[in-house]
Amino acid sequence: MHKCMGVCVVAVLAGVASGQLLDGQNIAADAAARGMPLLTVQDTPTGFGNATGGGQDSAGGSELNAAWGVIDGGTLRLSMTGNLEGNFNKFWIFFDSMAGGQNVLANDNNDGGFNEINNMAGLTFDAGFAPNHGLRIEVGGGFLGINAFNLLDKTAQSVWTAGGPSDLPIANAVGGAGVSFGWDNSNVLGVDGSSAADALTADKGWEFEIDMAAFFGSPSGEVKVTAFITSGDAGFFSNQFLAGVGGLGNLGTDVRDLNQVAGLQYFTIVPAPAGAALFGLAGLCAVRRRR
Ligand SMILES: [Ca+2]
Ligand SMILES: [Ca+2]
Image (cartoon, rainbow, N blue to C red; front, top):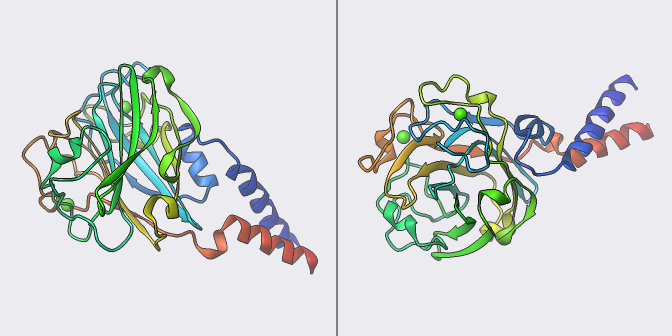
């Protein structure tokens, strides 16, 4: 009976947590409550500037600090801490979740914006990573946009648009392509321009819940992810990648093959263990109660 009580308490807490807002805040705690393990931590000081003002325009810099994720039934949960400078620099998230895809980015993709993605043509991902879909995120004066793109049929659609930094933070947004999210762009913690030691102090950024059937067209057993920030035209690469580039400076215009960067610049999101599923725990609790 005492064992059962422990399980019941966990199930109840998890049930409360699953109803929390997607607000881009308290990311580590919310990830823990949602059963999302920490998957990768930034190992590289930001070469794109360290924002210190706390405004939603992330004035002065961009960075990616850490990522958490889990596949919960047909939902891909992905949270990342960091901030994106409000100067139309681009935040790219690429997903490898199914057969096919582009280990080397083609030159005729459609990102739903001005096709800046094609300024990355020839970018070679690590062996074993061939993305099939992605997200393109930007914010600047008077505009904020998140687009979903499909590298298999080379189409794109809008997830969300808004008027710029003044419309942030955004909480519990239900956008196109099956993407729900929260975004708080005011992080001032985490890495800075000289050290990555404090990466895990950042607690604001992005929380995504992606309906895998709607986004990918086909649910998958696991999803590999790479996330990174570029210049506005995507012709210049920062050094803010998840997984990290091991302390390198901005990759700039020269590095076009991530096999030449030590380690893997992607991380893998896997399904929640069956016994840890929220409703599974609740069910176990109910069964034990009846005994
Ligand atoms: Ca920082
Ligand atoms: Ca590599």
